[in-house]
Length: 351
Image 1 (tube, rainbow, N blue to C red):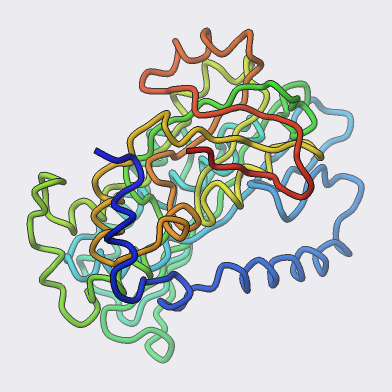
Image 2 (cartoon, helix red, strand yellow; image 1 turned 180 degrees about the vertical axis):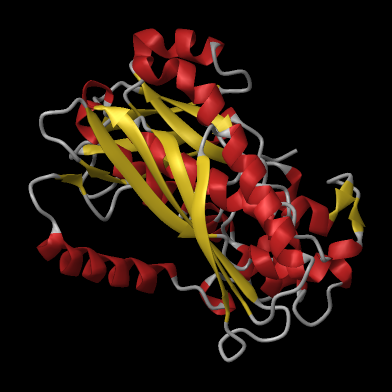
């Protein structure tokens, strides 16, 4: 089985693109750069790192030994799949685990979490099930679900529409803070498998399968997946906290592979002048991604630009510690290496 889907099928007809489904990654990157510049005026000397990294790092007490690390994100249009399936028990896990994974690259463990649920109308089913998922994921992470907001906004949300956003704060000892300055040429990139799409690329999936107008494809069993498409798409975003905790003192950094896949996320964890070379032959892309590519006739390059393709986290480690770290992370593999950058190239996908 090819690790990158069927390139011949992807060229039949008009390929589906993320931009065509309504999400323009290039435009989003430009806007985020503007936001970063605007926010810069608010950053004082106690801000260790602000917008642009996975989590913001703040020094609450210059005489103390700990830093605070925070992050926020949303589940996105995966919520539309949850509504179509009538299942709300998994999306709470999604947002907690996503946020936990976003503060991990700084070496931080979570302290507390808050949520925002925006909804057209409150009922007895959805909100309690969402919060049950939030609470269970927080318990698994040793994190307090300390507060939140449920806003009933019928003029903004309609029908079964709702939104779910999370906010997390964690801490790390100053001596244990992981930064991109730690990385060097020759460092190894160790991959950890994803559990599926996690929380990115669902606008493209919805466009390919037309689930907004006809949810029937979600209830059909896909033989290659051994389950319905809907169940595969609702698989919760995996948390890497518990398996990475034992190795935090042995690694140089990590990258949470979310929106924008390798191209957007790996450069955040590398020092200037460095590039990540990913060996695409080092793992087999899971069937779900191949199914999406084939059904949507999505170009191979677009798939690698949008999806995690089976890799949820990349750990950066010195070569002499790679075997030791891998032995403590079952299911991991050497996915590539760090090397000097050639020009502006920061990520190279090597076939």
